[in-house]
Image (cartoon, one colour):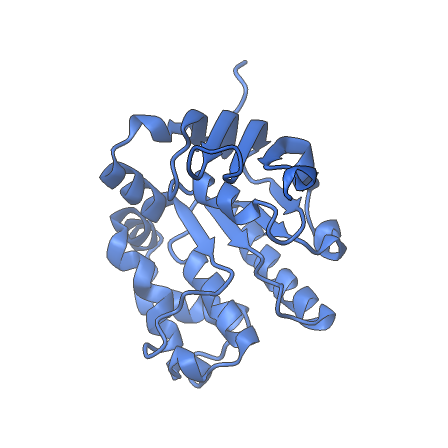
Length: 242
């Protein structure tokens, strides 16, 4: 029997900014995230985690190597095909949230559906009204639709904005969630509350989850912890920097 197709598969990936010996470079020999698996990628701030996520999301393209997401090879796609694939299949929780400040929380959650026919169609097949589904996800993340849901994003607290960003990532049930340091600005109690809600949504949808963090405390929530230095070579090495 053939192995299941992983959610993420990287082989011999080589990416660099510029061409001199002192320019940033990241190499990944091998990395896999299985379907429905949750993995936390741990490493220091400024260590290349966000660059790796940008490669996985198809925002950056490597000079060499293979990046397959849900069995699809990014290098065989045009820029527009890669953008469409990302919109349909990947929910991203950005470190800075990237909410539109003067839209309501509910309207921010609904934004991905304007760019993805597949995610909107998934809701139609589930007989879920779009607005009602956004309210349901926000409610599950402790954002009351009738109050906070109607507020402009700019008026929400950091923790509330974080939950709205997570709800936006989950709308339409994308197969893969990528989260870039989403708990970095929260205290321990708020981190645990957020992760409880995040994993509840993940498990309900059978989604694969990759989160990067410099905080090893939250690693126990995940199926697997991966140290960045164990899968990546980053150049220049610290000892090379004068």
